[in-house]
Length: 124
Image (cartoon, rainbow, N blue to C red; front, side, top):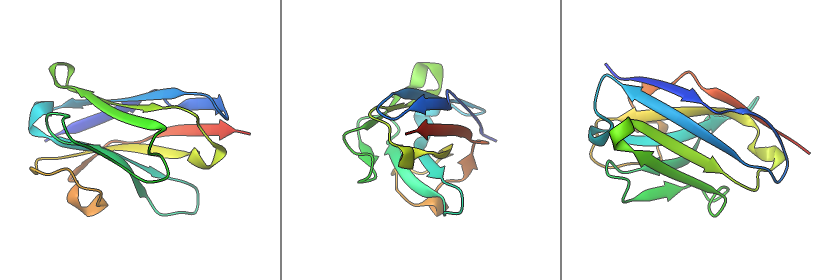
């Protein structure tokens, strides 16, 4: 069983930056594809970013491309989401997700393991 614990959320002004972390346990991170999703109040959970097992391939939602960066340190079993130039519309609960699959995808249904989420609030 894989456990995921997110950290690093908080309140930030528009234009600011935050870095989210997701620590994985129960399985070595190098055997997992990992992703970040978010859910704003009253909206469905949506894809933000994903990383292949090695971190060599990354994928982003159009709304965050060029502002957010997903990275991973498999030695620390941790994946990160660096968020720059934050906007009020980035306000959401951010969830870390992982799967034993080979290919990182943008689909919620492709991820078996989920963290509890961390709140990110961007003020205008």
